Image 1 (spheres, one colour):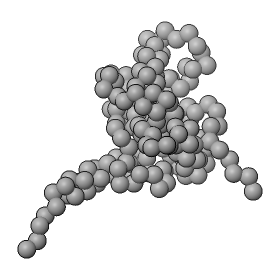
Image 2 (image 1 turned 45 degrees about the vertical axis):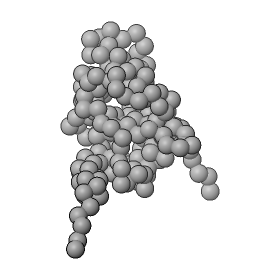
Image 3 (image 1 turned 135 degrees about the horizontal axis):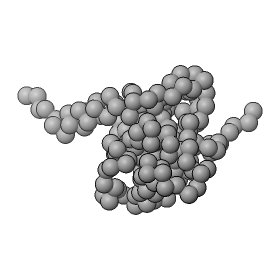
Image 4 (image 1 turned 90 degrees about the vertical axis):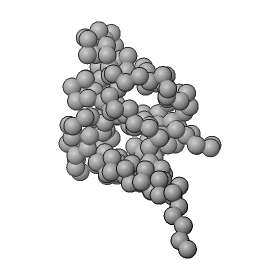
Length: 168
């Protein structure tokens, strides 16, 4: 007699759906939680309610709705990769700054580039919370390093090089 494992099939189904989204936007990430994918997706940073987000450290990846940016080795929808000690607080800051940029109420011009990308190309967010003893800086470094290896550059709105370099 053969038993059908419902739990396994549900996890596999979720993994397949997550993988479909990741194939388009996040497949540059190497060997990173391939079974589980990202923790959650925010479909529209400008409009979505962010009150249910965790107050945990983690990394978030902001991607455009449809625009692919040209990098030295290919094209990607990724606008920005960032880290935080509190996902909810940081994404609410990004949401507030994006709304200010849309309404032309922006005081700090040096932040404007990042939010102009989001303003004109849309902003969808994927985030990963840190697990165990994992540090958000290490997680961010590995994701940015994977992006750099795949596209030959850091994302368009990442102003500083924030990942570690290995010297020969």
